[in-house]
Image 1: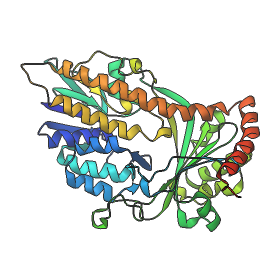
Image 2: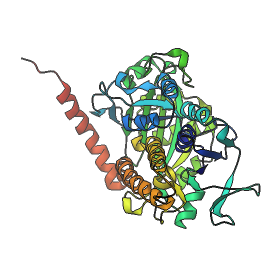
Image 3: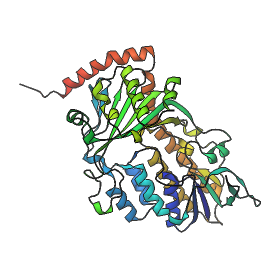
Length: 417
């Protein structure tokens, strides 16, 4: 079977690697000329995503991944702060967690190496259709085309393939604009290093302002102690943060800025919402070249709304089907699981006992359920942030935060007597 994969993100490369390892004829096409030219800074892979990856790539690739990743089990418990830096609550104990964090560039490079010569960079897909024999065909911007037995759209939120299948967009803006950056832990004051700690944190405030700060240390907190295998682009303790504001004309104006100008504008925006100065240090001391903006898009949280097309010889995976905001840290992992499931179904295919549409139909049923799960988790945080962006929500946030913080302090005080 010849499979053409449109899109060389995490899901597309994972599928390409699995197909190649399984002996299928595969070609992966991506518009980027360089696999390191990717947005986003780090992703979380839970136990399910890692298990799926082990079904797609060779054991030595998994070992390189673990040697290049930061283990959540070695982190402190996550913390929820308010906009003044007061503790509102704590996350679960991570000591038993099998999850890892890894740089997106690192994982994409590992998977691209696994795909090898079957990855074709700098190829822009402009449409899909049918060839003279009625089979699926992929059309490129340079006027050329390729045919296949199966076409898989792994081309993300703005998927050309999924839009063709659904005859409409498969997701819409979630109402939030995100801004991300990287800050070395050593760049912060000692007091702020102590407050943030070796954990991930989330800060919330009135009017939809929120700040996630993720901790990544693939050296000191390596999931596998094998430095000779590490490919991580992060070489020391680093905070990778994401600022969030409700979508508006004022927020959209920030998307036109870059570098230090964007960093300064973000600080001014948080200050206008009365965030404490020390909570913004991680932004103020970020590498200005790392600061970037992106829109949150989301598909429906209802499984029945996902992949709303009849199963055939063109399908899709990952964000092309279930575009997921980054607020749950599950999007890339879900795409890898999609890829593993698709490969498993294709391996059951025989020309005499079943058809490709029947195989794809079973695969898409799984994708709908998984997509609804990850979207429901991600949208809980999105809705919480947006709930503070009203007069009533802002007043409630301002009034309740100190009360919740006081109650949290009391609960954590040791008993005396």
